[in-house]
Picture 1 (tube, rainbow, N blue to C red):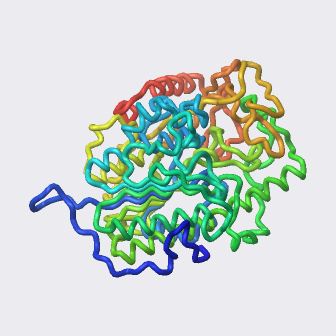
Picture 2 (picture 1 turned 90 degrees about the horizontal axis):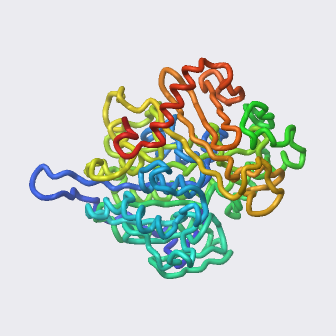
Picture 3 (picture 1 turned 180 degrees about the vertical axis):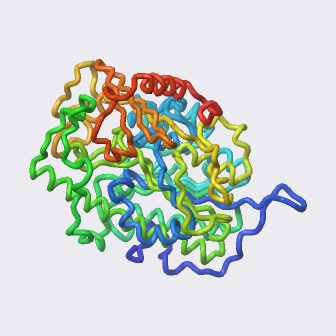
Length: 507
């Protein structure tokens, strides 16, 4: 990481390895339960399907090869604020009520702060004596003056270093425990990914003797894709993958996808290739962060007692079905995420095929801390038993819900403006991926039948169905050719999912 020190931080190379190991902490007496540390590294917009983990060489060795890789990890909604809200609360969007990235969509709103933040996973761990640390992007509207500004510190965090607004690499503002901290464009002092690494090392030096929860939420691989200076020439020959659904016309899909231009212009493809390369370049600094933080844990003799999780808030697309760069779609490239875990009791080089959701992270953290999930209102379930038990869990979920509520474009007319409030991420070609009538809910099954069934809330009442086993790129919508009884069955399952809460979401 170029030997940077962050803002007023200590250079990475100067940290020493002379501190005591974390001891057992419990409720007293013999047989007490040792409380393990928890580290979550969360990236932004990092896909799995399109090769998003390729730059993460150190991460794959230090976490994946040293622990478990989950091949079927998903976000329950493919947009930043709703997805992060699901991760924090352990709830589907229809229960935490964050619909999109705007204040009106409940993103970091007063209602969120009053009714949802008190039930996020750090609150439970803090009550158990964990020292809690958050650094980086929180929710897209965090820091807005209308909802408390930088003075608002979400409940549950002992040390708070929250990014104001959306992902940036330079020229940003942080809330440092409620105090405004402005940063400019000097690499050694301000580059956000490196700063997060350095601040986390400082935290570890001071809190090595306590059970801790750390969340490091990096800006990469979100736009504006500003690479560290020493990585700006990396991957210069790399292009966006041309296989699967790239530059393919989605003729039997929802209206929004059908109106995407196909074939794309050469200028659009060149733009997508550039974006793809720059996304990888930003991730190289995240790879360095992982190595630095795990190295510090090792030097403090904490790594053997720490569960380390690596994942992203959702996936991404770069020209799939001729759509410009964005997320917000129901397809595998937008909802699948990387998930790597290492820690006590986890054997190395494991690959798990069970479906893990981002709403399962909170319950898993609570399980690690010995907190009963029944004391919460979380919809997810702990996957700690899958990690530490020798046998697979045959009772694990076979299906789950994916839901998204469009934002921005008013009215029922399936047409979008070329510019204006109804448009998001219109780079080479605009297809209005945040339109209100790009609102859908899906049942995704992962069992003997590998299906995706989706209903849109629009004037067409459109349905998309995919056999993901025979059609992994979701090129053929089979809604009109499958047995109508299957459609009815999936519709009923979807209705139950959309009404579920807590334990009923896990049944």
